[in-house]
Amino acid sequence: LTVDTSNGRIDIKNVDFAEYHIDTSNGVIDLENLNVENQDGSIIVVDTSNGSIYMDNVYVDDIDINTTNGSITFYNDDDTFLPSRFVKDTTNGSISTNVR
Image: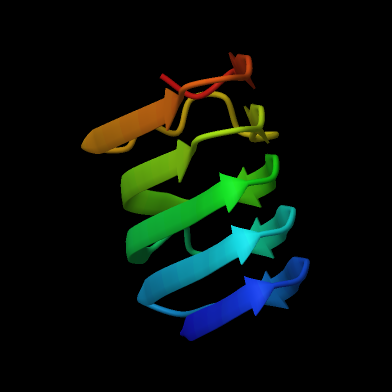
C-alpha cells in the first residue's frame, strides 16, 4: 500500500498489506489495526514533515517512523510483539510507545 499527499491528513484502518509506504508533507497520519490477525506485515515507512503520527495496533516487522514537527504515538494491545527493526525519529515533538 502506497499513500502520498502533499497537504492532507492520512487515515488508514483495518487493512492487511505486506508493505506500507505512507507519506505527507503537511498532515497528520493516523494508522489503526494494520495486520492485526496474523501480525505478519513486512515493512512500514511513515513520514511527515509537519504533523503528528498516531499508530494503534500496527503489527509489522520492520518499522520506520519519521516526523520533523510532530509527535509520535504508537501503542499495540499485544505488548509482547517485537519487531526486528524499529526506528522512530522526531525533531520537534515527543515519542510515546509501548513497542520495543
